[in-house]
Every structure is written in structure tokens, then in C-alpha cells.
Length: 103
Image (cartoon, rainbow, N blue to C red):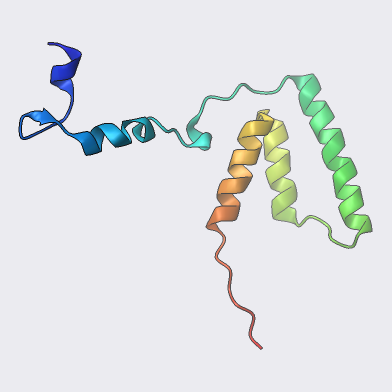
């Protein structure tokens, strides 16, 4: 069977709408992509940066809460790549529902 015969058809012809969206169908969400884990040395560097950042956040009276600290510790424990960490944080931020302040 030829490749042209396997395409979606509409009234016996290749469906132009399906073909227009075909590039979009290949999109993969960032969280589903394969990411290489960080090396132990890279994890140690990331941990040092996190501890410095936590100290600066604390100095500005805006410390990380326990849930945030646990999230970053999980990243380090599992050796997540920086790209995977960023995708995870962006996905979580997109799920937050903002509640209007009463006033």
C-alpha cells in the first residue's frame, strides 16, 4: 500500500483539513519527552544553587514553603534535568486557579 493511500480521505480525496493539522498532531507535551538525568556532580551543583536561592528568598522575607522544598528535593533525588524541572513547574503553575480577593 502506498503512503498516499493511508492518508485520511474525504469523498475519495485526501482531507485538506486533516493534512493542515498533521504537523500539530506530532506535538508532544514537554513532560512526556525523554530527558536525560543529571549526573551526580550536576545534582550537587543544582543543590548548592537551590540552597543559595533559598537563603536569598529567606533574607527577602519570602521563604519557600515545605511543599516547594520537597519538590526541589525530589528533583535532586531523582536527578531530573533542568528542562524537565521547568516543564513540571510550568505545568503546575498552569493548574493553579486564582481566587479573586474579597474586598
